[in-house]
Image 1: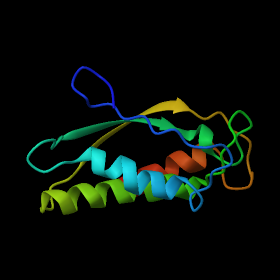
Image 2: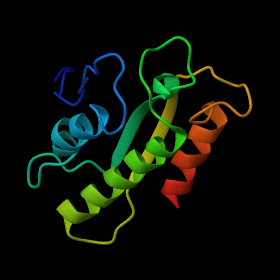
Image 3: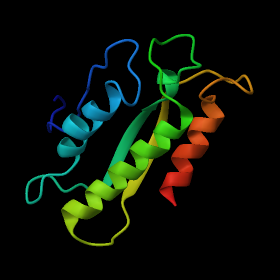
Length: 124
């Protein structure tokens, strides 16, 4: 945890991680609990550095996420925040492209565009 206000969390992910083997546990055990602590940390807006370079089809990284995994993470975040708040108020999300360069069509697990689409579908 870093930043002047302790509001930045970096979670190292081992190489060759997939959603099932590594990412899911880190997301659920480290990321989600950091995002909302009732009565202490209740943000209205979440600014997310969207690192799409963890796609399996991405040649610059050594992780193996599929495009649909980005939508899953977005859905889990929205659901977690709503559950913790105990209301149906929308969750403010802002994504900044932090990495991801795979633009070829028909690659296993999807390309950057596929991952962005899955993320946005989960926002609706």
